[in-house]
Image (cartoon, rainbow over all chains, first blue to last red; front, side):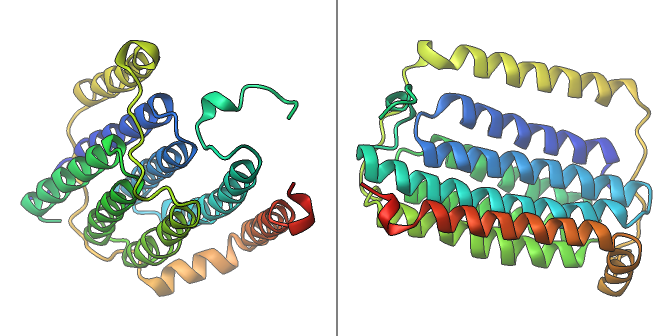
Length: 101
Length: 165
């Protein structure tokens, strides 16, 4: 038996909510990037489910673009984290509340 | 798609994501997230997306998470226990946002008729995927390649040696 289409969407929503909670609650920059990864993956799950539901490959093609976007976001974000860590010796975002050094 | 396997895999994905966002050691969080990506890849495979499942393992679990591990070890934050944020400070907005998402999802879930997903597995073969990608959406592929190039240049600029104090 197949699980209904909306069950997949519910799983996607739960993962999305967990990612949002991770971004909003954790104070560590790396944990925030991990939360963004969870959010992007949940969106990709919804895309693949829609692709299966309407029998079109476009949803899966968009997941490929999502993966490229996630990869570029993580590379720039981690480079920024390394840069900030060299400047301030911390990755807690509560210490990055001013634009001047 | 086998329903029981779907339920088991989604339970594994939710559990490992929950563990990942609540760990105090970063290494544990990253490894739990790899587990979550593996179960998501299996769900993708069962939903007729074999190429996306392979890319999920290769790009997310393989490349991105190893990059995370590399940075965590380079900054020597692996063993440090990061204190969790006190509840009253920031949990309020997070709980409100998550509740809004879950509530709207529940409206969608109970307000629409339950349609079963189509029973085909592997309905987008890699051949069909590639043909659609490189005939219909080749311009989007160019745009994404430009995005990756910009990300490369940005990461190089940020990591330049004389840029650092």
